[in-house]
Image 1 (spheres, helix red, strand yellow):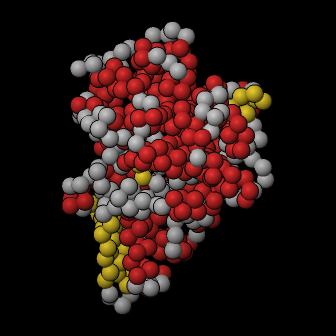
Image 2 (cartoon, helix red, strand yellow):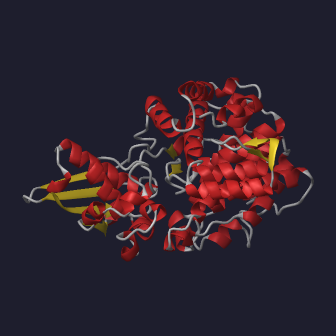
Image 3 (cartoon, rainbow, N blue to C red):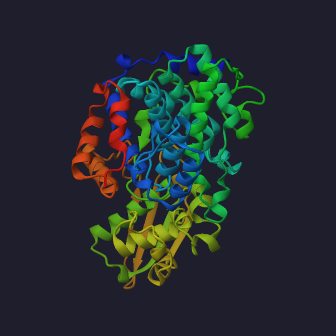
Length: 460
């Protein structure tokens, strides 16, 4: 079956006027979430290193906006910078079934492409919808557990395809050019999980590089550069090369019946998605039973098997994080700060907390176990089981089927706006924040994204 061609032809056929209202609304919702994490991510130390590189490569006052800064650069480098900053907080959106972060790869490429050609808000929505469609379908087809076991980060590997197709849509490529763009993207699919070994910053680079490469792939294809038309299903193609148990049929299953962008989750906690449900369970128990941190004697967490090598092992690292990245991927750390501070926000994921004896003491009370019952519903659900035993011998338990932010347990628009305001308050004035929020909610009415983009430059 011509899997690549069929998927590309579908994406090329998507038109704003045919999109259901809930898909349009969800795209605006995810756009706002992306703008929030990208702007606040501009303050991260890793992002500042990226900005230094972009400055050395040469800023361009007529180029793409670098969100949360006063800088502009060539469009591919603006996409690189924005994707890297947006992923630095571990607060960006997630598709559970594909186990990847679509927004931070798709939106940087889509915004850059819109600025490049002066596309309108409807075209941005089209590009985002098809970018999510491609990323999620590929992530599911790879089988996330198998892909991770090979050492790959699906946000990076699948992200370049989503970014390339989104950019191709916005730049007006025809079917053949879009097919070439996807083929070119396949030779740029990258993202190693080795960052877990020592808390390196490279995971944050993955969606930025995917967005950058997607722009390059689309521009090359527009110039007539050829890519393999069987890049997904071919003998040496993406699905076979990147996973030992991929299922190519997943790529096209239910195509045109529903949109994958509707199945994307929002993160309320500033850490790996595999930690979100356990943290929700801890907070529920602590709040409902009015427990205090000093009453807690033991915490047992039922964790998904796929999450174990990401947030639980090796134990010597997860119980002794040395950096913020280590902490973002340490379940014991997330549990400890949730118990001690009643939240797991950016304020908790700091070096001060990483080095806190109080946090370390609480981490030592946390045990993580595999629970086969949880794995029965994975990856469609990412549940968790939590038990807290107090010093007086009382036991409290909770099961979280759908963590907060999942499509089945979503943040409301008001809750998302609160998240966006919290993230962007150090970057934009109140009036600027209000204007960004209102215009994002009316994104389809924007006639030229080059007029919207300056709002994203820093004004504080």
